[in-house]
Length: 135
Image: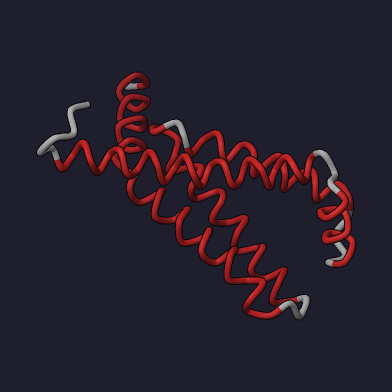
C-alpha cells in the first residue's frame, strides 16, 4: 500500500493501528481472566459474579480481539466487545466504584463502536458474498 499522497492508504493504516492496539488490550485482559490472575479472581468475587463467568468473559474478550484484526469480521468483533464494555460500565457503577473506574470501559466501548463503524463496508461485502452464494 503506497501511502504517499494517498488518503485512503493512510486511513486504512490508521484503522489497522487502532484495531491492533484495541485488540492487544482485549487479548491481554482476556488472558488475565482465563488464566485466573489473582486480580481478576478478586475482582469477580468482589462483584459477586460466579467463577465461570470470569472465564466466559475472558474467552469472549479473546474472541473479540481476534475478530478485530480480521477486516471482514471486525465489525462483529467491535459490536461484541462493545456489549461486553456496556456490562463492564454497569458493573463498575453498580458496585459503587464510581465514574473513574467506569471511564476506561467507556473509552473502550466507544473505540469498539468506532471500529465497528469504520469496518462496516467489509462486513457488508461478506454478507453480500454469502447472499450471492446462497441465491
